[in-house]
Length: 393
Image (tube, rainbow, N blue to C red; front, side, top):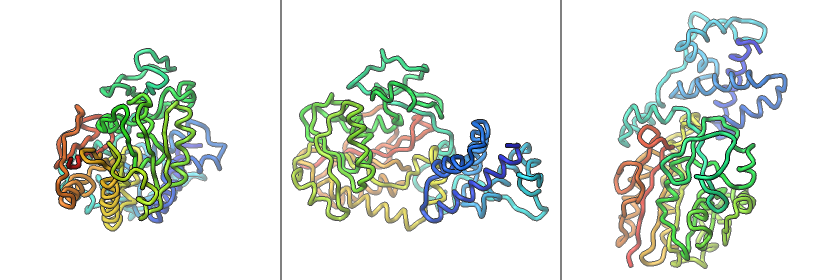
């Protein structure tokens, strides 16, 4: 592909990503993968270059652009090497017209930027949410130790006890250690969240929004398979991925429970009032993961944020009914918005007299309301909010 053809490919991909953002379709990384599967002629350098152009445009354009071309014109405005590539060549984009305007740049659309400000997210912190994320792994202590494991590349040992960092794009999933279950891909912040759960041997622990079970596996590793673990979720496909992952990791998950939305307690009735700890890794906007999915800013609207806040209240109420007297409910979102963090904790405590918020026993993050918030700038993590809620005895 010529440099101009790469720009045109990026424009086509951005149009697909914008359409998917509008219609809640596939994420950008999947669309890029599918695009190049249909274009086998594109070499690895072409794929990397186009992908880089696409994500530069997404990160640069806060408000949703009118088109992929407008987004790439914004890149051209900031990078004088890109502008000449709008040359009207056979496979390149048409020349830039005198009246064409590039897309607006910034952190996010105005209402979303205002939410960040209202949530105490300072401009430099907001910008860090749009940087390129590294690739973090967790050494699975059921099968290996960080101090002795042999990996094809040398990574950076991080603050969490089993965390190692590699550059973005490292092909971890091709390593024997990954195939053998000795390592798992997991952001440093997510690993600290699992530490904050504070799981102990012989406890009954429910992962209420387990998804594919990344945090479930980390908890199993932390307690050396000595707790009773229940992984539950409403997503059959994602929950179905847990069993093979657990088998590969040598992790003991005692029960997987598929939930019917709105009727969760029917399936969870055996554990009502019996859990020592319940992890509620609630569905959220994902604003803390914009480094990985920057097009998430284009997908979110006010109605969706309100819907997610109501869903978070629902899963918190559900989790509270599983906790035994004196037990703990750990509320987590990968979000930096107060609507999905501090405000939800305050609302929960108003609804549940006798419960109290405890400090998270982790050496990262800073206090936000009655919880703790991690950010890329301060902590080198994705954006996370975590709160520890204890029931009355």
